[in-house]
Structure formats: C-alpha cells, structure tokens
Image 1 (cartoon, rainbow, N blue to C red):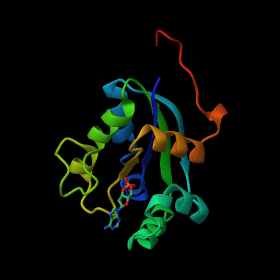
Image 2: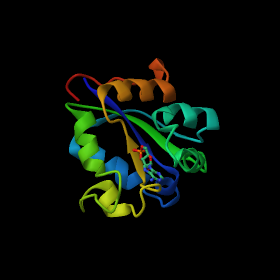
Image 3: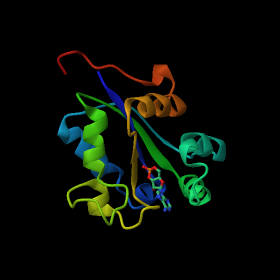
Length: 143
Ligand code: CMP
C-alpha cells in the first residue's frame, strides 16, 4: 500500500492545528502508520530540503523548519501521495483553494503550515529520513 510523509510545520504546531490536520486525513480514510512530535536538527533540515539548497530562500526555509517542534507523520492508503497533495493545496497559500489545509490556514509561502511528499521517490526518501522501518506500524487487513 502506498505511503507518504506529511509534516505539520512549526507554525501549524504553534497554532494548535495538529488535531484538525490529522482529522482531515483520518476522515478521508487514510491510515496513520507512524507519528512523532520532534525538533528538526539543522543537519536533518538541510538533508530534507536538499533539492532547494541553491534557492535564495534556503536559509529562511531551514531556519524556519528548525525553529520549533514539528509533527512528522506517515500516512498510508490508495493513491495517498497525490491525494494528500490535493488536500494540502498549492504551496503558496495565496493560490490554494479554500477547503485545503493551506487554503484554510496559510497566509505566506514560507509559513504554509504543512509539508507533504511530492512523488513516490520523495516519499520513500523522506520517510527514511524521519523514521526507522520498525516505527511503521501495520493494521489488520480488514481494518
Ligand atoms: P514545502 O512543501 O515544505 O517544500 C519546500 C518549501 O519551500 C515550501 O513548502 C515552501 O514553504 C518553501 N518556499 C517556497 N518558496 C519560498 C519562498 N519564496 N520563500 C520562502 N519559502 C519558500
């Protein structure tokens, strides 16, 4: 079954949005298979956002993501990578549809509440950066 990495960013945690965001994914029908509240180290931030290291906002991006606790999760389900991206909305909250996480809660592209993997390759890489294999739990087939 497909898995994706989803993270409530420091602004979302600080604004008490963890519960709302988790509920959206639960109600959609996805299964939470791993989760932890954690502080991202500068090394992990640089690795996680490695593809952006030449962008002018890289320092702002890594500074922000390490600025406070994040809630890191792995969600599982049919087509979860693409569907979660739709549920999150466009990266820039000014362009995200109302009804999406960023459309409902975000204001700026830097503090946009949530991160989610954008492809199967990113999902595998990001899950591996944040979780060990034994952290990923399994449900009974009929649950
Ligand atoms: P995310 O999905 O976490 O992946 C990369 C992040 O870079 C993105 O969300 C945005 O929060 C951030 N980002 C993109 N463009 C900018 C920008 N111009 N300034 C600051 N952050 C940005």
